[in-house]
Length: 322
Image (cartoon, rainbow, N blue to C red; front, side):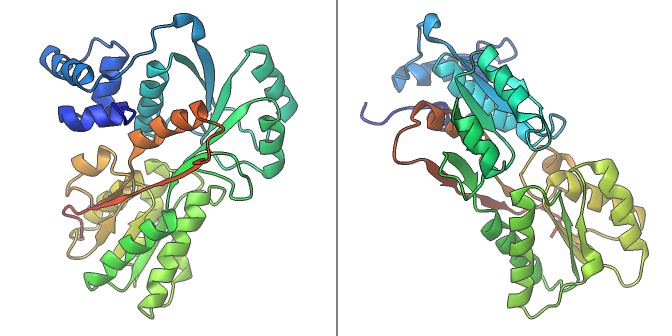
């Protein structure tokens, strides 16, 4: 076939999730037999090629800021699917490359004979330059715009701006922002999009309602949102940069007997499982997380190709919280 087939294509034809394809490709036992057979039939039909040469396996190191963050799960599934298809081995590392002895990390990379590094956090130009002098580096989701190293990401600014406008179109005017750590590029860009949407509607920003948390943690967000809602006046809507934070807003609102969305409208981000199981289900912005992960390995494999910077599309998912 003229088009190179990947696991994302297989998922669409088989009408299953990309993570299911990943499990089949990785020979996991927790896939329903009928589903696995259907996926295998599509693999055969599309002439998907598995790399059979075990001796060509190389090691890719994933540097992840926070393994407890559920956002990374589907990205890792995408990476695993692409790695399995190309006979790469994966190692996961949680070293804070911004605050550690980078020479020690580089020595580790050499000692383990790492072939490539996929980073999930924006790194300084000096650190990226040092790392890329000894190893192929691909930036996943977060990236440094001053570097020409490959990256795959979304447009955080536009996605946040569009989501905030959706809140404004419901008639809400007192809107709060629950953000993550400002050390992440996504947090800065989503706040910028949020503020620009308010400007377009000639709405001033209430400084006390712009919350930046040290981590995307439910247990951190819940008491802070509760404090906001206990005051008068309080926001009548929230844009949250994570579904986890959106769930905290919904539960805090219910604690004060505020109806969602009549009294408090909420939009989350990422379209993780929590957005579907919370009551009411959370309106959110879907990131193609599996595709982001898969594409990061493709960028590593085709490191010297011209198309080194990928920006994937997001999708606004309307549920019952606005």
